[in-house]
Length: 275
Image (cartoon, rainbow, N blue to C red; front, side):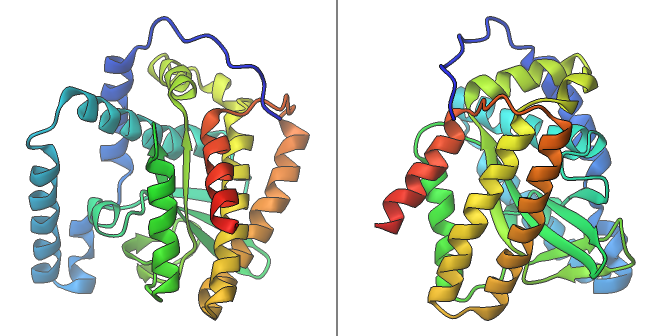
């Protein structure tokens, strides 16, 4: 159910939100240098140089609109890392781990969510996105193409918070999560003002879980179609965990049915591709 669109937010404290986001990302990101004992200093140095080259490529030249959009995506990434984690958007027995800059750029994974279950620890890779226009479809198509071509989604620099695993995380289910501009503006203001309580019951957490569910269903069907058994199992596990979690969160967070246009874009893209 979608409510009538709300009026635009008159003021967005983006500068303060972005400054806080930069601090959070710096603190929460996985430190690549700490893996030199595992991969060797030469490998880590080469990956760091790759990050430096790509960041220079992305930032030069960058028009003001692209720069603001990039900054907003980083704010949402910080919100997922800090506020979603502290307010248990993904359940009590979960952890949100920001990836290294290498995995963010190279593998398109901004964060990994770990879920501690009776049968062990399950993981889900998130590509956090703030989007306007047709970026949703492009990112969805890229994931689908990877599945069809048999490319495995991995995170090279990973250290579990719920277990003792450290190293390359392979064969993880990948989805995108995001919000539209108005929701992002509202969340930015909460983040700038450090209003943690406003995140605890915000409807966006239910929307994000629904975004994950519909993508897991879709990518699972693609994996089944092209007979990628390991990929199918990854999405199937994630689907079961998130579907159960959504019902649990609805017992904690009263669902008003409010969702924004990002979810609608996801549904529209999947419906169009399914014909």
